[in-house]
Image (cartoon, rainbow, N blue to C red; front, side):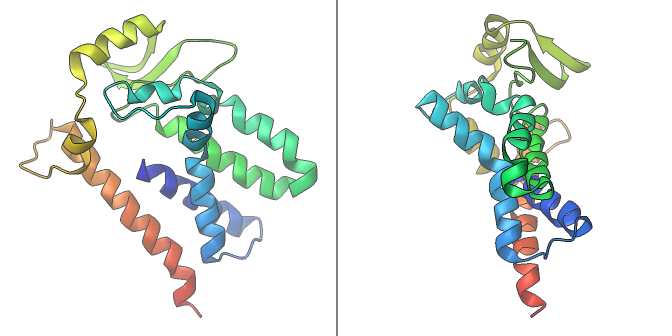
Length: 190
């Protein structure tokens, strides 16, 4: 969740600087919004928000396809200019790529051309492909908890190298901290 804000912000920071944009706090926050935008779009497309073990289902539509940023770029480049459209599209692209790994249950990266669900570092493979929802849902039923948010984000007990939820929670909170620090940094230079 928080890593999407940070990824969008980093695209705007580094690529925006390279393209000659003035780096300001609102500019970086807009980049963070663009990195999180696919989730917001998904909630609009699904007309629901689920916080139980089936939370991953918000990734099962065009909002998490790698084709969304391409469509956005083509549709807006004349209106916004190719540099701004490129920044927004690349920030949006970070979202499905980040959702490939971590605690999620994969992404339908190539919708509408394929319903395959891609997941990185799963079942002792670098790239695992669920060929249908039934196969993935079987894994979710076995391994996912309805209390996933609390287990990942709010428990900081003893961590081991194998306690992925704990490490992922720490990564998420660090992403939020770095996002905030980077967002206020331009204000400190004044």
